[in-house]
Length: 363
Ligand SMILES: [Zn+2]
Image 1 (tube, rainbow, N blue to C red):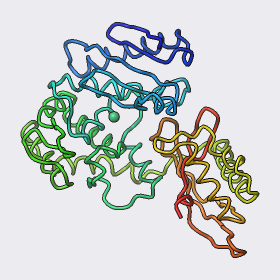
Image 2 (cartoon, rainbow, N blue to C red; image 1 turned 90 degrees about the horizontal axis):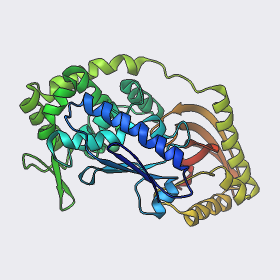
Image 3 (cartoon, helix red, strand yellow; image 1 turned 120 degrees about the horizontal axis):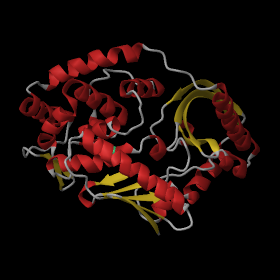
Image 4 (tube, protein in one colour; image 1 turned 90 degrees about the vertical axis):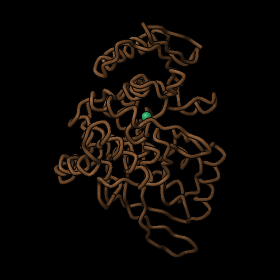
């Protein structure tokens, strides 16, 4: 391990993986940001925080470290090294720091994940417009339905786009002082695989989530969830109607090239070639063996494959910029060709755009 200190911030990483001068710089940048966020959040004292940087998600998994998570009770965040300019930690260094600081508003280690994640998005220091980010993510996913309706995803706060947009609306209306007033009412605890609110209710459904949120808003801010939701919908509406900015031509060309190279390798029975389209691929749940099995299945299943790309939409919720590609794939099996709609996910790793997922991979 190597360690760098800057005021309240201790930064650690693997010896040999990171230049100590870069770790010093990362610690200093986070110390400055910690002070800035602490001031905005009205904290009188800055807590000591530790940030553990893994050089890659693969290395994090091997060392049983998280790839972007704050442990508020321990005052520690485990993140991926921000070595690439468009890496998550380079662009949104405030996200995990906000989680660590928010615990000091009321001393409770956990809060309703929807609002906790949304607040971390609001304070992530990326300069993004979170209503635009949410609208863009919905556009990329082809999501229908009511954009301000919560779903079971919101129980875990895993839809960062919706969480960020919702909390931005709360902060626009009530300021961070309003969020601070709301905080003790949003404390939760976990037991027996369930989440319980500070008021003793179990939060296991969308209805329970909305009830908990509604009571918290009434107690802290006077208004109710219906009022907040209507205001959020009004603020979000123009973004949902605005067209999505397109990707630079160079990215579009590279994305199409990677998909074509993957299809060609599958057609040629070239497992190594197909593997190259996934280069830089990490996975939280799959290892190299799973990946090899996936590719040999593709190669055995198909005699020929060719994808026509119909739309490339930015998503940007992973460690690096992400796109969703919608297309039509011609697949030939047993001498017969069939066309299928296919959705692919690509991420812009430091080595370039690479495939990370495809609906064609699930038979
Ligand atoms: Zn988070």
